[in-house]
Every structure is written in C-alpha cells, then in structure tokens.
Image (cartoon, rainbow, N blue to C red):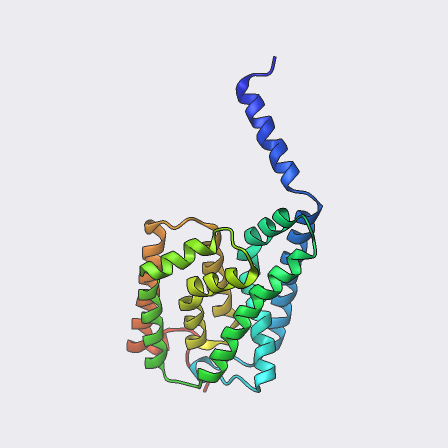
Length: 233
C-alpha cells in the first residue's frame, strides 16, 4: 500500500514532468543556447576594445550590436524562469521569441541611452557612479523592481522594464569601469544572475551593496589598485 508521503512525492514529480513539455524544453534550450552564442560574439567583438575609463564606444551601429550581444549573454540566463513560465502558459513555442525579443529590445534601448550619454571619463566619475550604484542596491525602489522581475508578467517588454530597474545600478558600474571589459562583464553577469534566481536576503544583499560602495571609494582614493581601470601606458 502506498504511503501518503510517497503518494505526495509521486504527484509532485508527475506535476513537474507534465510542466516540462516540448515547448518548455525548446524554450530552455533556445534561451540558454542563444545566451552562450552571444557570449562568444560579445567576447570576440570586445577584444582589444578595453581601455578602462578611457574606453571609446566606436560607431553607433558597432556599439549597439555589441551591446545587444552583451545583454543577451548577461541577462538571458537569469530570465530563463520567466521564459519558461511564458512557454508553459502559452503552450506555443512561437510565443517565446516574441517574449525574448521584446525583453532584449528594452535592454537595447538602454544601450542607446548609454551611447548618447557616455564619454571617456576620469576615475572620480567612475568611483562616484559605483558608490551611487551601491547605495541604489539598498533602496526600496531597487527591491521592488527586483521582486517584480521575479514574478509572472504579461509581456517581455514589461519584464524588461522591471529587470532594467532591478539591474540598472550594476550595469552602470560596468559602464563606468569599462563597458568593453570581459572581466567586469563576467562579474556583473554573475551578480545579476544571482539576484534574479535567488530570493532577497539581507545577509547577502547588504555585503554586496557595501562591496560596491567600497569599490567606488577605492576607485576615488587609489584608482591604480583596481585592475583594468586605467588604460595601459
């Protein structure tokens, strides 16, 4: 005779297996595959472009192409749960490209704003941006956007708006330190992924925010101590 505990586990397993149908499997494979391909593209395009705070963006078309690849590489792994919810909810594979495309379109618009506002800058500016980003990590607005970025949404555009609000401080740190740095891109990508898939916990979030503030202070006081911040002589 099946015990209640075993029966409950069986029902949960069956429910998980039913939820992982063909659209879900295709969505998972396509999303992570696209992210991996974009990592390769971004790293190749960024090769030789990293000049720390003196980095130049190149032409508009070049930068937007690189930025779009960067955003797909950095943001799609953390967006996978939302993509899978969309695939399960619609039961149609074709709903996923529209969701992902509109999500990445929002981040591309952010890239347009970055291009228009950016210019080679000094270490004091980079440090001030990092300090402001660390403070932003502790604000209720950041927490609200982070929470909404983990919830079900109606469209990829709406999801993108919430995730931009959640991760914009971290992205500004990348732009301030060196927007073409693969090393800093990787660090920021890990933090963004962790914040998207893990629940908010003060024991983790507070040290991360303080570390960003500390990095900003270090940049202002001793910029030479931060690897890759200054252009090579």
